[in-house]
Length: 273
Image (cartoon, rainbow, N blue to C red):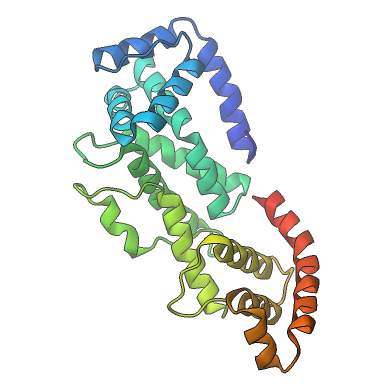
């Protein structure tokens, strides 16, 4: 798994957890007692099997097995630590995405993982809604507040629009990390003049706007130039050409130069992610 060193360390630790005698049997026993049947013989295979069933059966299956393990995380004994570690490992892909959105610094990854552990160990089983999404949402909420307290620039602020997803009885968004990032992206892009006030960045244009926001913040592209590129992607070549008083052919040549300018920036953006 790529990402900050904390995630590499967790992967290495997970290999040791999986190698421990009797641990897979212990987890399988909990799941079977909770009515979740599995045929895997190791923890790695077990998580892969559960993930495969989640994709086939949806959130109901995910909620079921996660609740079984979360019920066993209370306390400090070996069983509680193992149950929490399995849930944390299952949530790592979401934690990696969250770290990338909050800025992929190693310190940020450490904060996200620490918050994820806290959320897992004290998850309220009475709460309805998607377990995995709620775990991510609560982790995002906690990590964002802690990072904002430590630094005025690194953390993505918490957005009140998501509060309803964190209220007991409400269904959390399927991907709260993506939701909060889209909210932040729209605000940043609108403030920079890359979006109209009522415009929602999605699809290919949304990806371009995200690239432009990152490029401006990284100092790789001037905001004026970014606005021109954003306008080009929103309006057709003919309309842009008419406003600029040039031919459509000339404008398409300008767009070709824009593509050449953005290509190395896009490469750096991809590497940063």
